[in-house]
Image 1: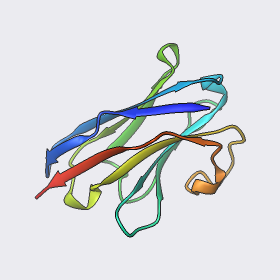
Image 2: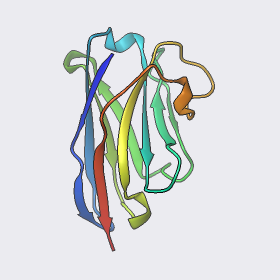
Image 3: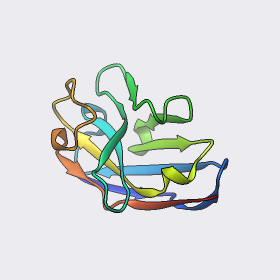
Image 4: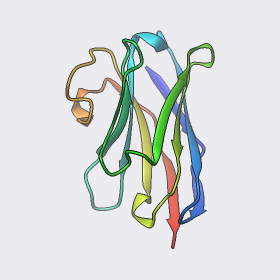
Length: 124
């Protein structure tokens, strides 16, 4: 399982960014794909997940209504569209792949493989 994130950067509060997660080495649409973030001194937290069955999506309450996820199977790429960004969204963002999708989509321990992360910084 290989995943590469891109699209991070510096943005002002209220702005938007779209992160990409490109996969290789596995059958993309057989896996659930999750997005996580980790701020300095904090635990890695689950933000969103798209299931391997019927592309059902899940979101953490703090990003619900601001973030959306989608995937382009032809490109083996998943996207995290982030709108109305806040300074507290500043973190390293990761995507992860999960071959055995279940209820604990928000737990980093559920996932089989991870990307290297991309930094998102939101200035006030």
